[in-house]
Amino acid sequence: MNTQPDKATAKTAGTAARTPVVEVKGVNFSFGQGEGRKQVLYDNHLSLYAGEIIIMTGPSGSGKTTLLTLIGTLRGLQEGSLKVFGNELAGLGASEQEKIRRNIGFIFQAHNLLDSLTAYQNVKLVTELIDYSPGESDRLTSNILTKLGMKERMRYKPQSLSGGQRQRVAIGRALVNRPRLILADEPTAALDKETGRQVVDLLRDLAENEGCTIMIVTHDNRILDVADRIVTMVDGYVASDVDVNESLTIVQFLKKCSVFETFTPTLLADVAGKMQRETHPAGTVIIKQGDEGDKFYIIRRGKLDVLKESMGKVDVVATLEAGAVFGELALLRKEPRAATVKSVEEVELLTLSKDIFMDVIQRSASFEEQLRRVYFAR
Ligand SMILES: Nc1ncnc2c1ncn2[C@@H]1O[C@H](COP(=O)(O)OP(=O)(O)O)[C@@H](O)[C@H]1O
Ligand SMILES: [Mg+2]
Image (cartoon, rainbow, N blue to C red):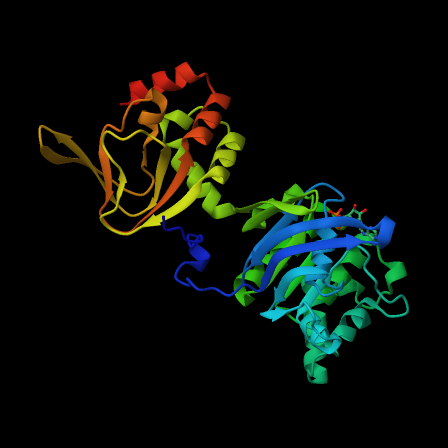
């Protein structure tokens, strides 16, 4: 069976061989030594691409900050592979790490602003890492602080600013050099709703217009709408990694199928997350009339013919397109496949195994009710 990685998001369609900006493979991490040694990250895998906004969530202590600091080269890698901008961090020297860090904007909970400097000076300081002309440096500094609503307070020192204002200065400092990657740990926690929204809009603008990759660790569900992907960490590993637009598309497809009509959005999203992806060339027989049913299918892309054979004659009885579902009848009725389904062109299919399909439908309405719905619909 031919499986392919997801290429379906509109934003990235057509760029099949994308190189990740961050690629985490098999990363483990432990704190402490000897008896006191405690493993906190287990076999993590994650790839982040240009222009994506990734929201990372999960319970406190699940390893989000640890993973973020490893990606940011603020902590040494112990086990596994971690590439940032194509550079392997394992065994990388200090000066190379420093070069990588220069392209990363950090927004962390502890702002680390310098108390003796004004908001303006705190931001301008980091522009000195880059060879801007003095005028350019000033222009970038006042632009970013203005965008963050800090125009009137640029000359204030941190102790004269509120928590939210200090956070905005810290954000200005992270964004002023237009980094390729932004790592943010709870960036909106100290902000009121309106400022939080401003910050998020600014981040979205950077992702869309400059291809910046933005990873935000947050529990703030007010900003979920900016996410292209939602990654959940549990007990030290990436427990789920959902492409939001793709998941919404699958949910829309599922809702059109009578079996899933009564499902809540939560259940539908759960089913979408359980689906596997397969790609097949033109002319592939996906299911064969008379065979036992083993899967349920949704067509993600491409066309398929439904063929029925009777008395030695084969007829095309229907053509199915993207969004159509098939294969559920044999699973529900425990009968052989009633028809053959064959691809007309290259197709991408989403599937659920029989066991998972039966498990999810039994979690919603009763099995009998599902069966009645299916008979009613056909
Ligand atoms: N500097 C440290 N020394 C020892 N243990 C730590 C340290 N930092 C974090 N931990 C532990 O590592 C685990 C993961 O922490 P962390 O990455 O901060 O989780 P999260 O950001 O998801 O809340 C927790 O059990 C935490 O107690
Ligand atoms: Mg944390």
